[in-house]
Every structure is written in structure tokens, then in C-alpha cells.
Length: 77
Image 1 (spheres, rainbow, N blue to C red):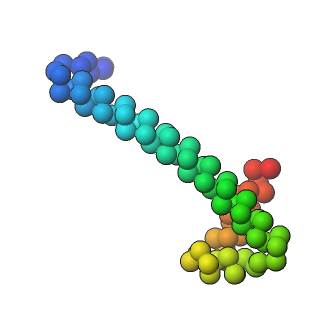
Image 2 (cartoon, rainbow, N blue to C red):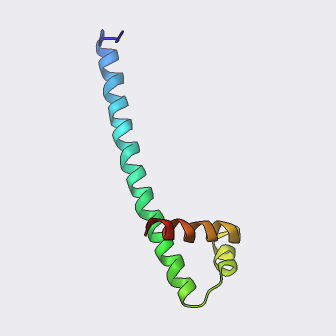
């Protein structure tokens, strides 16, 4: 059973819902790109001699978080 658009208010709400959905999809795409860039930079810094602990301190995260970010990049290759 589906609900049909009954009023202009319903139509407006459905239009807004579609806008929000499109925005969420775009933001998710951007977040994936930024995560890839973050992993690339982390890997470059590790190659240049920084330790996972150094990077964790700079980012305010745990060393394990850095380790997971690096592993996630390796899994995707």
C-alpha cells in the first residue's frame, strides 16, 4: 500500500526529502575521497620515517586508529 501525494505540503516535503537524500549521497562520496587522501598522506609520512605513534599524536587518535586506516588502504589494493 503506497501513500499518494495528497497536498501541496506533502509534495513539498517529498521534494525536500529528495534534496536531502541527494546531499547525503554527495557528502558520502566526498567523505570517501577524503578518507583515500588521508590514507595516502599517512602512508607517505610513514614512508618518510614517521611512526604510527607520531601520526596518532598529531591527529589526536590512537596508534591503533592509524594502523586501521593503513590496513583499510592495503585491503582496497
